[in-house]
Length: 347
Image 1 (cartoon, one colour):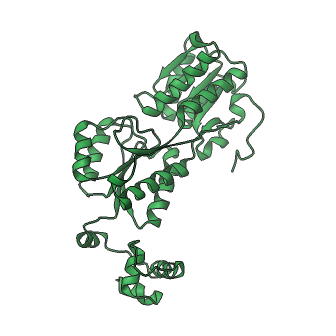
Image 2: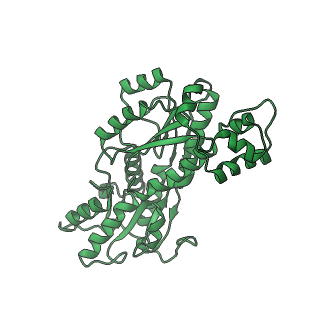
């Protein structure tokens, strides 16, 4: 089995230097980038895997982050995880994650299970509930810092967060549909109360109100997956009232909504225009390509992980709470009825 000593010998450095590089520790004598590169190349060539459990016994630190994800099946989260992994790897951290499948019960269970591995921090990706007072006290007692990703931290007391401007994104999407001449715009929202869902719903309502269409507000709840999107839209199309446009909660549900529309022999966007939210990689390949509000998924993951690393290194008490809001631009494609497509639709 390859040891740290083998890595040091291969890189031509001392065992202490190799250890400092791999543990990302600060040395009194600065370690050059060239030396770091040699150590990391030696690790890769020799296939060295440090024993993180033995290291945690020595240092009283696990170099592990607990990650709770709402739904790993949603392609949106894959981009966020990619960003998280990049930053954590660069900082010598591992992570364990649990996916809650949008379940309040599972979210609570997995939070406590991850606490058992004594992580140095938590990343909450998505999520549909605020923490209870008991859980907040537990985090304080364990001194475990936490960062929320993909949602504002309004429901988390004293927690840093990275999210997009959900309100503005939904507002601009709705306003765009109104400018195209639509007056019967349906918003299909999430089936459970979510911070992001509430913000998007409020953005939709605000755009209608500003354009003098407050009495046209039309919201149906029950969709975050393609299956639920299909089910909700099918229910709507069985009624007498028919929308001319739909603002979906996310791109995944938009896919189900589009299938339902086509099932009824209707055309997109001629009969019903549609706009999604997220801009997952495959949305440009929907038929027709989906107009959507873009969330910079990898950047969200990277910025959230960077925030957590800073809190861990500097100490939770010395870091002010930061709530970073990223822009969520509207990406115009053919599903909304506008023939002008974004130049990076298929990148």
